[in-house]
Length: 160
Figure (cartoon, rainbow, N blue to C red):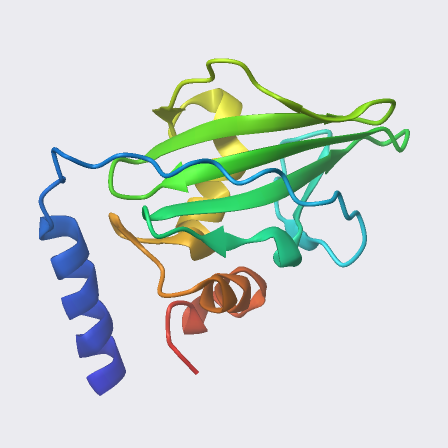
């Protein structure tokens, strides 16, 4: 019961936190090396692609952005990857770089923040809802995000 009350309190505080009008995104770190093994599988039942997050790539920045690499694999084995960031307090996602198997990472020029609820970012919305964000706030650490992404849905967001 105490855990439920603490979780509810955290959710309420995160949702009531005012947006900082002076917020600025920190300098974007370069994309981490692409890893396609040990990915955290994302359940995307209506997608023809298989999605996974590289747990080693998940980072929580001082600016409140959760950055990570997501890998999309087709049924033929073709691999695409994206280096993305989620801004939980505004419900937005941004693609920083795309991976091309022949040339590696390519930074995306002038990519803007987009809404998590847009159809093109379904995998990002799933990452936000199942680990990166708690309500409108950011989860407590990269390690906790990994635990929540792989863990039982009934135990998410509980520091253990």
